[in-house]
Length: 174
Length: 116
Image (cartoon, rainbow over all chains, first blue to last red; front, top):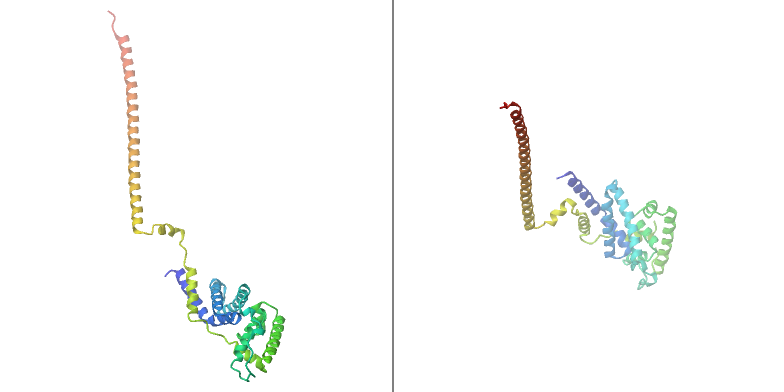
């Protein structure tokens, strides 16, 4: 095996490891944002193709994960803007109303929250996804989305207020 | 952390990608990374079939034989011309020598003959 071939094999091995380690994270960000499995797969695949091109300049697995998270966010937002997905246009008024008084541990509350999050404005939606799906700190969200920390704080505050108000109208008291 | 945040964490748990996602990514990368034919390989691709390669080899042999024959013929002609030049030179030298000898004999005849 030539030196070039062995270098390529090593690169491919590392790349494969990175795909398997991060596929859930990348796909979930795209899926939660776009609410469409096919679109999410397309975006996630493109993110990993970008990673392959960029592999030489990434210093560590942590660096690669951070980079993947950032690119997944931006590519998802770009995809939604380009394609005007149904998720981006969900109106809260169209969301299903509960059939009766919601219970404390309503098994459908998660689904309703997912729908409510899908109806949030793009930037706010991504902040919420990063905060609650990725468990990211506010500073991390600011880094990933390339926005000021105060903007993250205010966006998250407004998201909480909007979601709480809507959940309350659905009969649940969070 | 309040209940809304707990519920959001539950609602926004990560989801698994569709079956075979990683394999599809790797396949796409492999298809993009297939090396393009380099200029050195281009002519080999052009002569892809065995018959074409044999025809090319035969054509090359014929052209080599014809070139060799033409070169040999030109060399023979050059050698012939050189020999002709040498012969002409030798004849010219011989002619001039004969002329000198004849002149000397004439001079001897005219000066050495006794008077009657």
